[in-house]
Amino acid sequence: MSRSKVLDRKEAIKRIDNFIAAHDDWRGETMAQIRKIIHEVAPEVIEDWKYMGSPFWSHEGILGHGNIFKAKVKLTLHHGARLPDPNGLFNASLGASQSRAIDIFEGDEIDLAALKTLLRAAMDYNATHNVKKSKGSRDI
Image 1: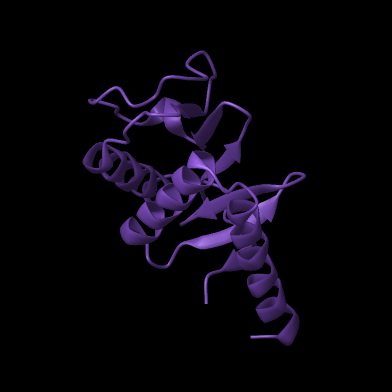
Image 2: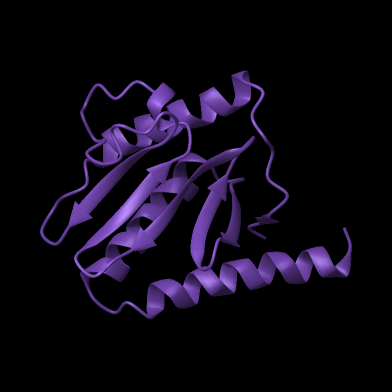
């Protein structure tokens, strides 16, 4: 592996760490929890920093990305419109043709088991469909 790839990996991880740390309230805690869950479900997940400052996670293609807003934390799953959501976690971007999102507001509790199931479904979707593969940074 080239030295520049290692630096890219470390830089993406550092940017995500700093992004979370810059939000020293419930929003940062929530994004950190989401990130931890993603790593539990997909230990080999690729982390990247894209599109003017958003953490992205990929596994056999883009899984999704996170955003922090003034009053919410958003997790968008790239192929969410094609995923089963038996627990009704998706509550945003429901009209989008490809993605679906989960908006989390202060005081909301994340259904960890349901989120893990949804993330596994996203990984399965990527593995069984011809989705664009990430060229991003892998957690090292």
